[in-house]
Image 1 (spheres, rainbow, N blue to C red):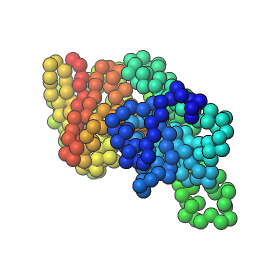
Image 2 (image 1 turned 90 degrees about the vertical axis):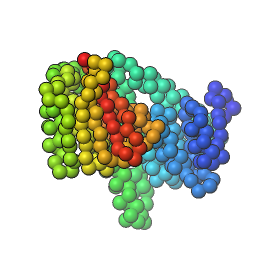
Image 3 (image 1 turned 45 degrees about the vertical axis):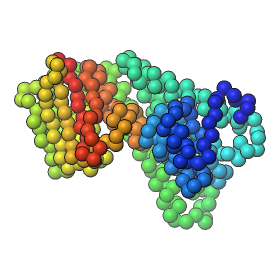
Image 4 (image 1 turned 135 degrees about the horizontal axis):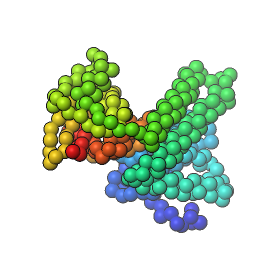
Length: 327
């Protein structure tokens, strides 16, 4: 480690200490072991980190025969894994690989964080490709590891382990398909065409797609139209779908109002709401899981014509999304 002094390293003796450090400090990257004192594992800490940040790179240390741990780490948002036995041997090349990978991850995530705030859609599409490429490579690694688990001990492997491995393979295949589909849709924003869309018609069309699963009340002023992307239906669909899937909502209400010349479209559900402190994080690419673009896509679609979106609900009382449409 002394040879890589350009990294200022902070150590945490257990998960609870690591959580406290992460809450009160900013880190360029995290190296995490699986086995940690006091009962909690590195996976517990990884989940804690990913709920609060999708940008900080996490490298996971695993044992020689810990393919299941590597799979679980990658499935929960780790960026890279390395067998710690390779480091313990003291082989300089292995340490070099670890810190070289850390440097690459830090640079990539820092660059993407800067592009995230850019207005240039071309740069944003390059960023989206970079993220999608990384997600797919991680999924392929999971598939490779799960296949190895089956091949290594095919004769003695319990059926439950085979099922787990196959489940991981199918899950990763699903992530790859969804990531490619979402990226292709996102790329279309480069040549997007804008037009006028009736807000009432948008709500009606999207509501029909949910049938009896969701009761939608529209109290939007008659005759309102907004000039925006052809993907506007997908924006509303994502908001409604998230209300059901993540908030267990049964009802949604849509309102319109005017404030300082802007149109405010408010979408409120009766679900569990967004956890306090996570109102901005939910619009980041990759938040919650590694499939699709979700609310990140919604924010991007709206921003193309200067429409902003924010979440202003109260945890436990339902989500509240406000779309601010300039005059």
